[in-house]
Length: 247
Image 1 (cartoon, rainbow, N blue to C red):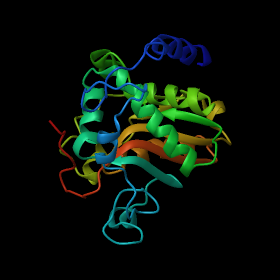
Image 2 (spheres, rainbow, N blue to C red; image 1 turned 135 degrees about the vertical axis):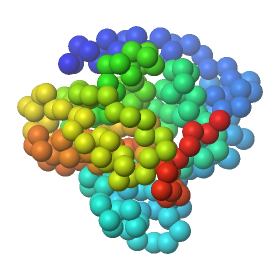
Image 3 (cartoon, rainbow, N blue to C red; image 1 turned 135 degrees about the horizontal axis):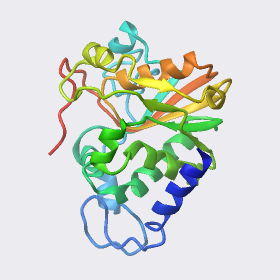
Image 4 (tube, rainbow, N blue to C red; image 1 turned 180 degrees about the vertical axis):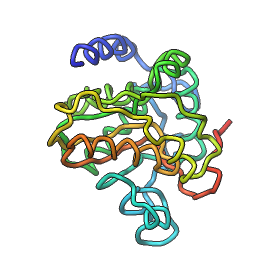
């Protein structure tokens, strides 16, 4: 497992050896090596407003959100860098649709969030994809984010869980439907790596929290001591049909 992530880190490190000449948001030329120009950064929807203390999504009022009151997210605390809207949502969609190099920018934003919000965990765990889904996309975006975060934070990445079966698209499903769709889809095959560990779950987007909750449940059953979660974006507005990809 260690060798797997060492090889992955070596393969993607080549992107960091190249200079960054354009803003990853607007494409304009930059001169200081930054990945996002100052103008775009000022407009990004950082998740800094009133948030649910559990799932970390933006809320209109202080306190635990209605979704977490119905079924608390399965981790001690989850946080996201941005709300899933505007250029932040477009960055994530581009990342998932082939612009693999964006792992650098998004991973660095995650690192800043994690240093601010979390104590250093024992390990990072990326939400896995099924073999078929990963083969189709060519990479697991959560895995790339975890590797970049590991490089910056000095926390190891482990992969003790596989996605044991295909699930239907969750794009237009609400939380209850997502929960049912995901039930039994994750399998911990390396319990020793999980037992008595504090783990940080890494993913690109939190929509309803169902994926993180299901994933955390199998880690907890395998003996994890404490669980936290960090995502690039999270959906602020609750909707019975979930979110739609930003075009």
